[in-house]
Image (cartoon, rainbow, N blue to C red; front, side):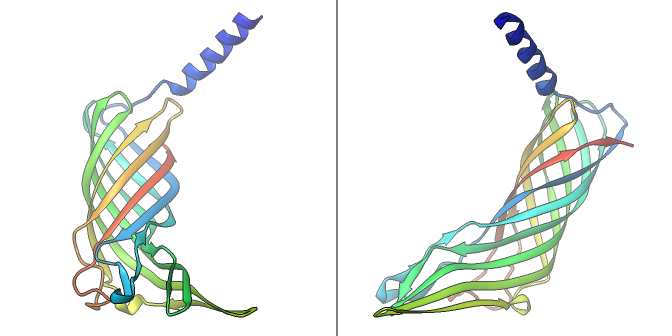
Amino acid sequence: MKKIMTMVVAAMLATVSVNAQQEVGSFTIQPHLGGSAGMMTNADIAPKAEAGAKADKTPNGGSVAGVELEYQLSKKFSVAAGVNYMQAGTAWKDVTYDGVKFKDMKVETSYVAVPVVANFYVAKGLALKTGVQFAFLTDAKSKFTAEKTQGDITAKLETDSSVKDQFNKFDLSIPVGISYEFKVPIVIDLRYNIGLTKVNKVDNLFGNKGDSRSHTCTLTVGYKFKL
């Protein structure tokens, strides 16, 4: 009985794990959903450097959802274009300055992104990809919580304000990534978008002079429908 159960489990796993790849000359459409982690360059916050109050960056988590159209040119090569709603931005670790603790500090940006990528299939179902992504800003918010304790009393201030006017409306990046297509056909896609253009209109947006660029990692799960 144990051997039969082992064989059944192995057969089920094999059915799920066998990869797939679309026929040459075919079109597929793939809705997908997942998460994102954004970080901006040149965005360390230092309210007063000599006081040692520097807030180091940490990734800002968000979500991504969209759809992608792919055309299989050959067994080893395909091209795809899509439209995504993507959250990016950056976050900072907690820091205390002048007796005030700043927590949950982040700038959240949202974009409508249009990626155009080339897929190079290095094995059946396994693709390496790169291309270009055009992103259009839809929103930008600054959020943080400030706390100060004196005796038994703790005062708390939470902020959530729009900073959209301090960001450029367009962002250009290069996506590089890898995807794997199962037989189902479910697709797991991991991408890293390298920002090429500055996102800030204001030179000292984070208290640092210079340009800030957005780098965002996305992980999505999608399902391919043949057209």
